[in-house]
Length: 386
Ligand code: MG
Image 1 (cartoon, rainbow, N blue to C red):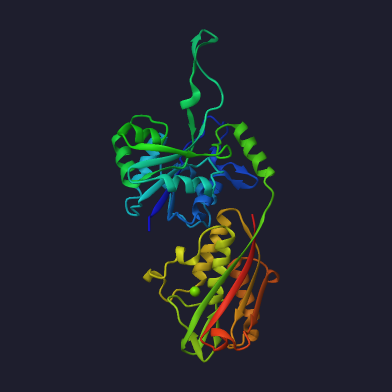
Image 2 (image 1 turned 30 degrees about the horizontal axis):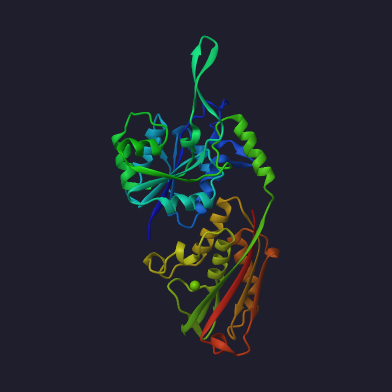
């Protein structure tokens, strides 16, 4: 598996913006710009690590912006963007990712599509960045006192406006940054260019703009207003085999039985199905991707950890869980007596009202593996408001 890290550069003071508060900490529709930027990368299924580079004065603001997100501790930046990126890259030496994406903190509308295109185009020898062709006619000028006098018109066919995330092989861009200290380059593609790394452009999008001026802030507010609230539904399904034992853990509740469920973790089929449903609703892969069974760390793990992770990702992208419905499929054990306990447990884990949680059970009329009591299946359905 390719390991991908994202460095979100948010150390700027935003002098062009005016006001006391750096622009990445301004809110749009009640969410900080930086929270929006970080959340997208936290939830992307191919991204393993997210780290922000911040200004030391902003630590309290950053804590609010990143609250509850599964994210590495931030590091402090330097006097220029280029210094901040280098310090951020150096801080990832322990994680040692294969690929690093470098993202502007004040660019909150980067979507999974752009991230996917950049990731697909990065190779050990090539960087990739999103960009758009220049459509305005471009002139060069000379300044004569108050006047700006046109010198000539530039051929725009070879000019592109570039965006972030800018993706590179981690080792290559780290070395490049070390060689370019003090050169005042404005983006990472320029650093790559200086040391001879070839970089390709993949399609960016007009919405993937950076919030630099108060006009950009208004544009961002308009864009969010224009996007309708969406309700996303998704399902999850899980099966575990019975083995010798005397209880099953179902939705976090110990249910006495003449067998237990076999599994790497605590084999809680209910929580596994629910975790997959939540990940499905936000397009964030599946439970095996986030918690590989090959990883010894998850041996006998409490499956509430998996569910809490999925809940944190929903929250990271500004989503709210609307409801959850779980059906257990088995002849035995009988679920009825434990239903309320399961509902109360899920209400705490999902942080939603008990009214919005349903636990059901059915048999398969003695047919199939559940009918023969070889194992227990669970399916889950959730809705998430985004
Ligand atoms: Mg499972």
